[in-house]
Length: 318
Ligand SMILES: CCCCCCCCCCCCC[C@H](O)CC(=O)SCCNC(=O)CCNC(=O)[C@H](O)C(C)(C)COP(=O)(O)OP(=O)(O)OC[C@H]1O[C@@H](n2cnc3c(N)ncnc32)[C@H](O)[C@@H]1OP(=O)(O)O
Ligand SMILES: NC(=O)c1ccc[n+]([C@@H]2O[C@H](COP(=O)([O-])OP(=O)(O)OC[C@H]3O[C@@H](n4cnc5c(N)ncnc54)[C@H](O)[C@@H]3O)[C@@H](O)[C@H]2O)c1
Image (cartoon, protein in one colour):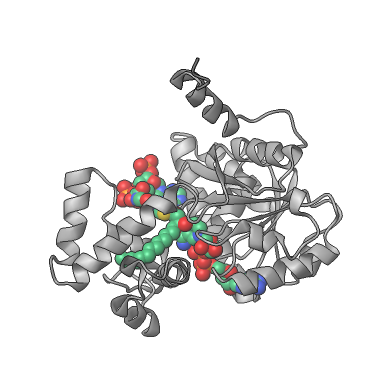
């Protein structure tokens, strides 16, 4: 007699193992977000919009002031959409949201005794992220859950420099955070059920949809997106098609809201380079992930995409 499971049961088992439903858990009231760039500012914003108290950290006050301006602009867009014909409700929503965000340059003081959750959103570099986590592990309350918003690096390697692997996971938001509905919740081998439940509940509380994934390169979205973007880059580098035609093709032919070259500019070409070079180290035999001369040249010239006013395309300075 065959001992194999019926297919339906097998799929049921797989679904259960990766179920990402929010269960009863310790709620997040106060969180610290480190890095006030594109992603950190967006994460602070959606958290504050949903009643969370946020401390947003960066290396200088000037960077924090820029983040504050970006958050203000984005919250006002959200308020207009949410409270269409009601200017008073719009301005109340915006001022209440903004009042829930504190700005700080002192990283070590940013994780006070009431900090439930830390989200790291700094530069995509393992050594720098590990330094930060190692430093924070010594000063943060033992109950604080640590997470990273990394696009492509190993969460397990980050957790390894702390003594809290059971209170460690990945929270991968998407850009623009105010608009994109998904967050990948990444579970490492040590992540406890309580931590995982708190993370999925927090994602639901900020009105996003969680999906769960193991700590595998690129998680779900970037495992599919990175090869796609890299293929677009190779098409361009071989001179097979222009940037405009590649973008138009994917928007009109595949229904994507942005083409791959536009999307690379939107994400930031520095982030693209960190990810591509990191994947080259991980997959050295795959020529798709070899360093890209085009990308390196643009990054060397400071042309990082939308955020600097020029990348593959030119933009109005923000
Ligand atoms: C080529 C180089 C290759 C190198 C190889 C290596 C590759 C490595 C790549 C790594 C990538 C890592 C990325 C990361 O880890 C994961 C990601 O985040 S991937 C990016 C995901 N995001 C997308 O795919 C975005 C796709 N684009 C869109 O969805 C839309 O274009 C848009 C951004 C929402 C903009 O929409 P538009 O219609 O064009 O513009 P509008 O201005 O009209 O906006 C529509 C709607 O949204 C509201 N809105 C937009 N932005 C904001 C904001 N910042 N804040 C608040 N609200 C916003 C706007 O008000 C509109 O609302 P409406 O008027 O419709 O009510
Ligand atoms: N850009 C995207 O579309 C996107 C999407 C999802 C995830 N991510 C990931 O999110 C992270 C941040 O990306 P981003 O696009 O917001 O980058 P960004 O360059 O816009 O912002 C990073 C910020 O971190 C700050 N920073 C760097 N080191 C710091 C430190 N030690 N302490 C405090 N602040 C520090 C920088 O000053 C900068 O303001 C990266 O890991 C990236 O891979 C990016």
